[in-house]
Image (cartoon, rainbow, N blue to C red; front, side, top):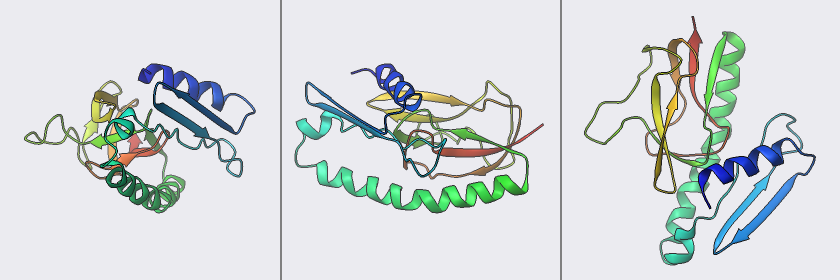
Length: 167
C-alpha cells in the first residue's frame, strides 16, 4: 500500500460520518479512528507496517516508542493550543504518521530553529514513513516560534510540528 493511498483513506474517513475504519491487505493493517469527543480533530491513522509481520522480534521495541510518543503528545498539544491562543500563530501539521527529522541527514544542521525566518515553500523538516522521506514545507511566510517535537520522535497524522508567527 502506498502512502498516497493511505492519505486518500484518511481524507475519506475524515470527511465521512464513520468513526472507525480498519483495512488489511497482504499483511499490512491500517486502522483509523476519529475522536468523537473533539469535533474537527482527527485521530491519527495507525498503520501496522509490514515490518512488524516480517520482523516479529523487533515489534515490541517499536511499540514502546509509539506509546511514549502518544503519552507525550497531549501535553505538547495542550501547550501548543495555549500558545496559539496568546498569539496569532500558524501550526504546521504532520500530513502523515512517521518519524520526524529536523535535518536532511544526521551530519547536517537542522532545516530551521526557533527564530528562523521561513517562506511558504521552504522545507522545515522531513517526516519518514515506510522508508519514504517526505519534505514538509512551512506553508506560510513568517518566523519559527516553537518546535513542538523532538528529532527522531514518532509523529501522528495532524499532529502539530511547528508554530510559525505569520508575517
